[in-house]
Length: 486
Image (cartoon, rainbow, N blue to C red; front, side, top):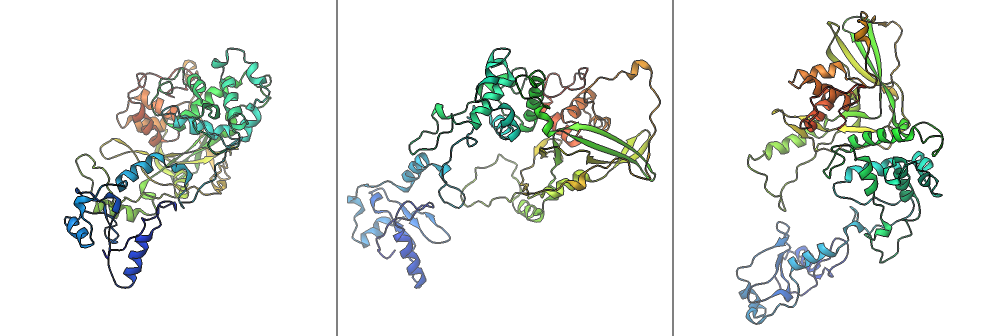
């Protein structure tokens, strides 16, 4: 140190000190002088003081074993000094307790607070992120606002049962709260974000939707995609009697997301094909680390930083951060559309391809990041999948039987007793066979296939590992096919 007295450094948002000491260090460094050590004068006591190093290879608090001697050189007797200012550690604690981190974005600039109709969030009820994010997404759609916005209270006052037990009423309350002005007056300085008068709390909605479900009625974290499909199912049931009376006539809200998935089986080396179609409301895309565009970087880091067998140590400042795999959405879509060979069908080998037979108004996409590792344990791939602003799926549209293709004939007719099949979604036999080959019970395999809407073996496997502890996982599917939603 050269004895210069200057102000402390500025914080990243422009607050804090004048940055005098840091500026002086840089000025002297430009001249060829190197005086990196600074002492915060108000923290000097007989026990020590805050000493900081501006050296590029340190840039942190340091210990000076000869601090008293160094201070004496500048006429400061540490034995007579008393603490008059907060230490850096105390300032950091105060800063973290009082600073509103939601005010800043990545650029470090202040954000303008906004509040009003359509700019209102849902209160977190504890492990309810899955519910809040799903409901916020669906209820922000113009179709939801048009159907369920209830400014005149007609939907809520016409409930055939008590309001807490009526799904249509609870959805109308949520939509009206999120899109109306009651909870969204313009933001004023001094407003309390946690004021109950300005919060939409979905407590009654959550209790009703999850009432008869073993998972969604609990306070545990849940899968957002699974809840979304369950919620749409419950809403469709409630709308059956409400459309055309309490609600404007039309199709169920869930129909905005439904599409036909076309599956094509082609004979190896021949022209015979079989087309089938299933109704789905979500496109499941398998996410694979081998599709990462920065795979070499990720592999190099993992080679240089092998996992330790003991428990993970807490991350400390200066530790190298592992790069996340970046997987393009386009690659996952190509994997979805790729032909799957080696499928056994009616005693022969065929290839299978999937296409979208119809296009929904809104396409829900599930990124299936769960996989089974080499130890047969389920894991979740920590990665980034950037979403494009615009995306064309026209080349993934199914076209049905093409000229020159010959369809497989129907199988021999089964006895009358065997012809009676339950209505509803049935488990894909090929998915079930793949799961059974992994020593998963047949009933559990069927439940997994139905719960994931026959989107593929990997999705079914991930579902099974998540629900392998369910008491009914090995029970036969109920008549009607639609089981295993838990």
